[in-house]
Length: 96
Image 1 (cartoon, rainbow, N blue to C red):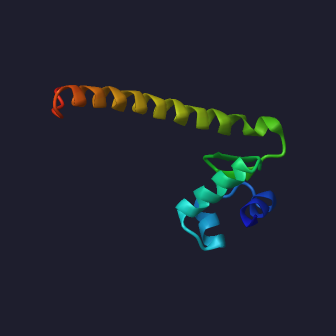
Image 2: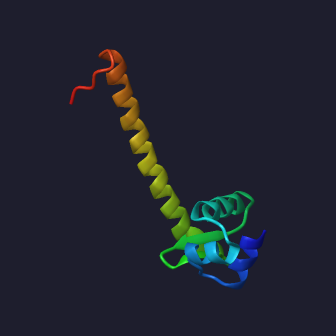
Image 3: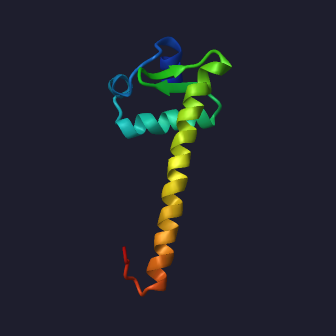
């Protein structure tokens, strides 16, 4: 996978730099990083961009960042489910 090879050779690297080097969009960069992580590649991310991790603890901040996003999404999902329940119980009228 070219993105992994780039990260192994040139870390950290910003998303926009990967976009230019690979001639792809930002969403494609995200998709490639996502897939590489699913495939078991130790790709971290932070304010300096994406980086290839050589030590287990290098992934800690990325794991914490992802967990924070998960927690936020769960809160949104719970709130929307409550809103949906209110809407369906009141003939589609949301009362605030």
